[in-house]
Image (tube, rainbow, N blue to C red; front, side):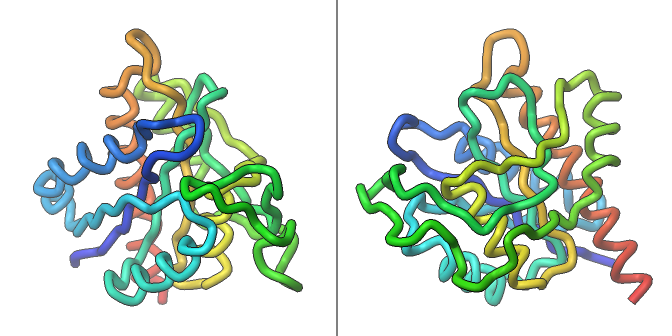
Length: 204
């Protein structure tokens, strides 16, 4: 029973000329055969850091790929551990430009939209699996007020698919977390998310 999982990262943005979440997507793409062995069809994409494009791009991807789970990844340069986001907020910074230099015209993502939407991935199971693997990680209630939070909010607001989440990654370091550890963490997160999505499909 094959299950489709869409994983996304981001391109460069002001303050990060090179985004390691894009490298992460390339690494996951090379492991598609491994995921196929678990009955997972993994699709990877790199999203542009553009306010005007994020919502329509995600809607188009959902329609084309028809994933049963979506797992977004993005860079949180000030954090030292992987952060599994547990919610997204209907907010955006008016002072932070995107990669094209544009700034939002309003402080909310969706007028009259829900103030907070909960992530729909097995966050506790992912956290436990990462810690068993020796990868420093935590749950987070703050996905920020930039494009990472926006991607999670728009994907959750669409309500399809059932499993949607976001994981922030720190800058890879020579010791911890190394890029190899970040890739391993992403693999674990994809597998745990797919297990939850498959369980939901069977229950339905």
